[in-house]
Image (cartoon, rainbow, N blue to C red):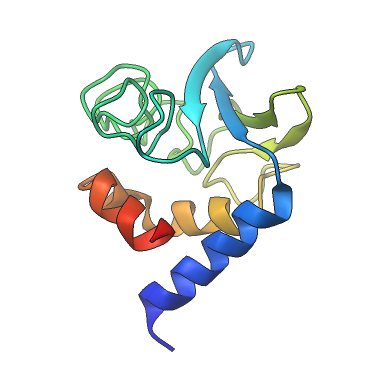
Length: 139
């Protein structure tokens, strides 16, 4: 099966299975908003909006900024630090917890739904062209 097709199927399943809009919060007390995980690329809060705060690879609050707090693989607050215990959390609008958004496979309560697992696997490619990846995933 084509990898991109499988990727899209996994993401579609993971998005529809929740029925909730999922958000990322990071920082020491998880009080720093980092964007919407499963919103469309036109949503101003979406991590998939390359022109918005959270999808822009140059913004300090973006998980795609490899030099920023939340996008640097060596920063303890970044989901891309595979040894971190301080990674962002995934919650819905009511504050229901869906797990820690992290590459750290040993982190207790790690977010392990399809969308999260796919992003973990391809994050370094996604950050290079968020818009292109959104199109591959959601269209």
